[in-house]
Length: 409
Image: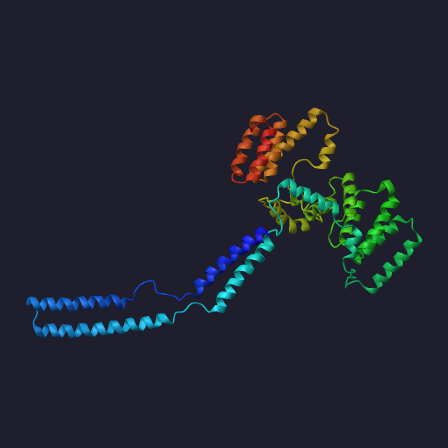
């Protein structure tokens, strides 16, 4: 409440000052030009009298000059009177205009803060924000509650009656053949086509149950996909469990990684969501189904995470892939070091020619330190700090990489 009281008081004071300024009559900042002319003409009359007393001009000439100057004085005085009368008509803005301006000032300030600020939030430390996100993640609604809060899904308008009849027949057939894995797979796909995502998830659960240990990461990621869609885009604890299983079977599964990033964004961890989605963009491929939704959201996620971000080349790569790591397991130490050296060389060439995000520079510095190429790591570290000068977050990341490579204190 203290924040709102102080902010409201300041806004009111500013609104009052602006209102008074708008209501005040408008006054000219300088005297009219005719007033200056009037002083000149009066000085001329005095000079004529002096000249007449010294005998410089005759009485007739002096009288003629007095008449002309007097005529000009009358004209200048009339001009001054007309201008002063006009000044009286220059009133301030109408009261209604001043009131509307004050209301817009106060109301607009509140509206902008509501959109950009966080009403009710104090100055939270990073550890507090992470703790709040963990609590939000642990206490978020279950799948059933999320589905119950949504309206009943509508059948797509382009679904023909014949197709709907075939799906109904498929339901009856699968019900009579509960052990048919292929039937359950077809049922899950077709229920999803009709926007019956909850029913599709039920069929997918049966697929996983029937497959048993043979169920793979794709099966669990498919279940999570249907659960998220049936909950209107919300990643529930049940969907998260399916995602965790999919990632334990295949850490590189793109669908599961995308939805894990989405879940992190929903519980208040945009930093984690950004890292996950950035990795997906860099690994590609361009035609992967998760690339369009990531592109639609990642810049906002980077903003929320406080990252100065530029979209990378999709599929440009970032370090060894899961296949590279698996292949390295069968290599001798010498072969493994050679493979790492080749990867480092490729990354170094790419950064030198195309540039890249700070994460890639930090990875290169760390890798060079591991390879014992300290002098090259130091050169890359110095170059990177020049490239990202002014970016506090980037410099902090580079400093940690330089410390790991023993080229920075």
